[in-house]
Length: 100
Image 1 (tube, rainbow, N blue to C red):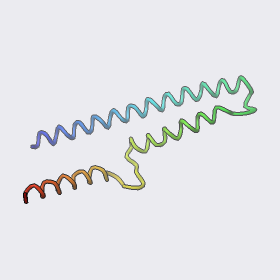
Image 2: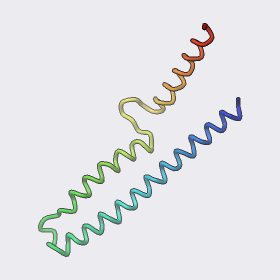
Image 3: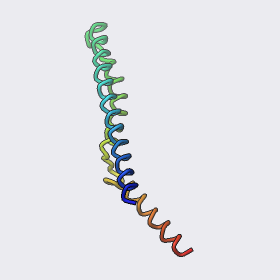
Image 4: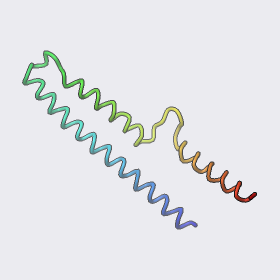
């Protein structure tokens, strides 16, 4: 029982590390690509209309929500809400099986 619990913790930690790696990869891509668009924008019209900001804003919103998810910041449910609910439902199911 304890080894499976340890294995589950390891798998959850591994998944979390993968999510963090994906976030930082996306952040680097965002920085490089938006910088490239800003460079093109500057040399085409010298900031008379900074159109690259539309792309930066749109992609930035997605990156912001990914960061909230990856770093487990949730305004509605709080920290570790999902894990607590899963454990609660598992306990309820176990107690129901005892009475059957």
